[in-house]
Amino acid sequence: MRILVVEDDKDVASFVVKGLREAGHVVEQTPNGRDGLFMAASESFDAIVLDRMLPGGVDGLRLLETLRAQDNHTPVLFLSAMAQVDDRVRGLKAGGDDYMTKPFAFAELLARVEALTRRGKTDTPTTRLVTADLEMDLLSRTVKRAGQKIDLQPREFRLLEFLMRHAGQVVTRTMLLEGVWDYHFDPQTNVIDVHVSRLRQKVDKPFPIALIHTVRNAGYMLRVEEA
Image (cartoon, rainbow, N blue to C red; front, side, top):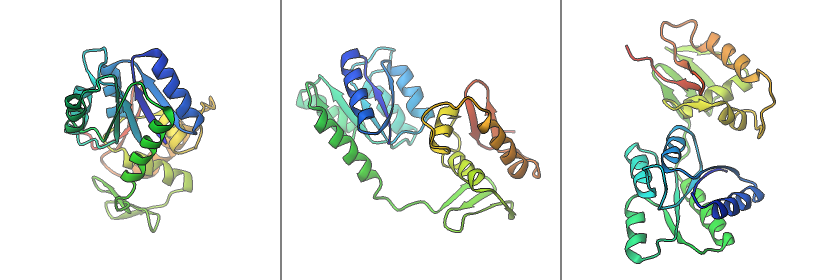
């Protein structure tokens, strides 16, 4: 799983990140509420461990309320020293899926995070992705645009699927390396650029409107260009 930890206490953050990574998860961490909101809104995570009191002008409640207003339903576990009943209730009413108080046992935190992600996976699986006139059938492994079939190699199909699942969001190189190539390191090659270029030749070049866009100094985005 890919987990975001938003925690400003260095010792707590280090402890949680180390434990989650040892459990086999990919972890990103930030001590800042504003940066945490940007990361949670622009990248894809399976779960978020979120502190209530954060620097950066955005506390945990505001961060979560903003995500939910954006229709982002990533499971969120509050991890906070604010332990009163009213504090816990406010966290859950803001859209939190679970609430743990400090001090805590890491084994319990890990079990709760994994339980939240299992709960989210009980939904009916998606079998069809659509962006504008681009359609992908995940069962038949076929792609069409404007009714025309597009033949893709397996890696191209996986790359396009990842972009379509994150349509309207910035997809970073790190996200693509992990989600499409299963790399948890940067191989220092242009493999992403080469495959995106090939995908554009098939998905965009034959059609009047481009869907795959480069976001300078950030990554790529699949979206319909506004007039």
